[in-house]
Length: 176
Image 1 (tube, helix red, strand yellow):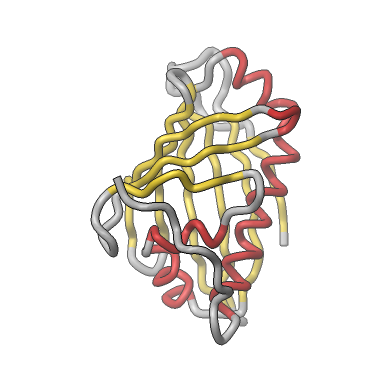
Image 2: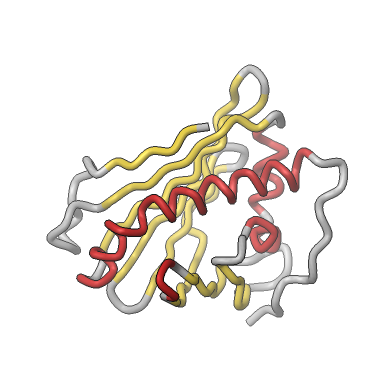
């Protein structure tokens, strides 16, 4: 398991700050195809959330979701609404989506799956592409908190997919 922060990405001109990339990764004892099958069904993503992220709604028909709406509760009681959508779907390898938080903050979220001898290295990456001043300041303070959320999501992915039967939870919110 590893947690990393990389601030050496080239700027896209959307912000005066260099985009920040926060990564977490962990080996999971399952083939990439099995993990991808779980992740490719966006209805499953609510099973990967913790008490800081709530799924508000999903967009598109069941089994063909295109994104959704989430509520993020952060440090100091901060609450942020995000609209999300799926950008790239590389079967067995990677899912890439975008989250628009407010009017000025955009992040790319990537699930990358790499086969390793005992299973799959699962990497969850959040790259903040553009951010308003308040979100840039918050990101500096909240980076360790966000890293823990990412690793927790990978842990929950492992729990949901390695167990013989996924944990049962209430159904996800209705579609919009």
